[in-house]
Image 1 (tube, protein in one colour):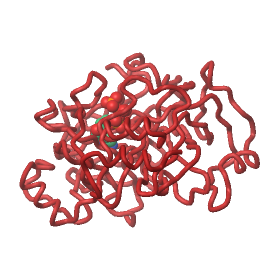
Image 2 (cartoon, helix red, strand yellow):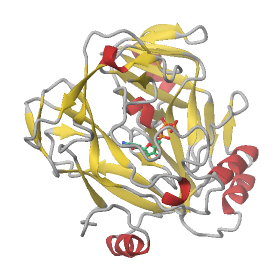
Image 3 (cartoon, rainbow, N blue to C red):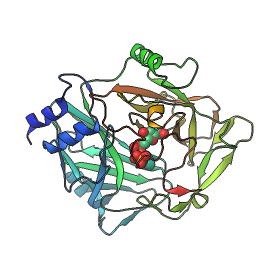
Length: 374
Ligand SMILES: Nc1ccn([C@H]2C[C@H](O)[C@@H](COP(=O)(O)OP(=O)(O)OP(=O)(O)O)O2)c(=O)n1
């Protein structure tokens, strides 16, 4: 790897600053050897502030999830825990309740001042496919240490629907970060004054911008509950599944509340319209990790330009992928469920979310994943 060249790629016009790499810097990083794709990138694989990761040719059904920890490779762990290998080239079904490790086509040779973080794509989170990226010697999921050189793997565990995947399917995405570009509480307040991050009257900025759940309803619906024992979702077939075969719509009943059934999966929407200004990227994080009753959002990355009027996104809500843990839990309209943390971009992305044909969720209200048609 030519680490020096990779650094130059990330530096262009942003000497020494902290920030998230925009699409054009990701392309330059790849060109200088910092990202090593097994095959040339697919069209639209580079997004405004992230790179989609593609499944490679092989996956393994493993007995259990794991983290390699220092000194061990993922491959060594897989050899110990694998039940069988799966050829992904012709396509393969990943069953609910099982854990799989898939090789990814992108490997890294990062310069020492670049770290990375991965997250499921929004479409993956919306079909309840639990997906995390792991690295050799990794001690945390979805985190790539500065200067990491080595392969990437995806841990995949479908929770509700069995899914059909194949070599090239894109379930996860990765962001590259230099330094610590996260906005402090006071910086968030200033950014909000410049361009409203949420349309709430006086939002809380502590630990990120508060996002609450809407249970008043959109056109009479508060959300969707996933059906059990459904057919397959082909992750590469947008618009080819009938929503009614996979989801039960939840009608607004005027109560402004919803009891989450443990083990069930729900798609809800935020009360606030959210906005990510073009020179920032955002990530939804748990409201409070100590509130353990329910979790929202497996998928947390929000692109620069999401919800931005200049990119056709005014009024966009955040989608909330909600699951209760062990007991039924009463969710109330307006309850805070997550926080959006904002980070500075290193440079303005050349393309914003919503500007390309491949943006499925710009200006969305309550929206199932792109796989479903109503
Ligand atoms: N919990 C979440 C996570 C993301 N998003 C929004 C903000 C993102 O900018 C947008 C697209 O997210 P991804 O790029 O992760 O999603 P996909 O790649 O699946 O969608 P697209 O095909 O539109 O790029 O969805 C959301 O509303 N709710």
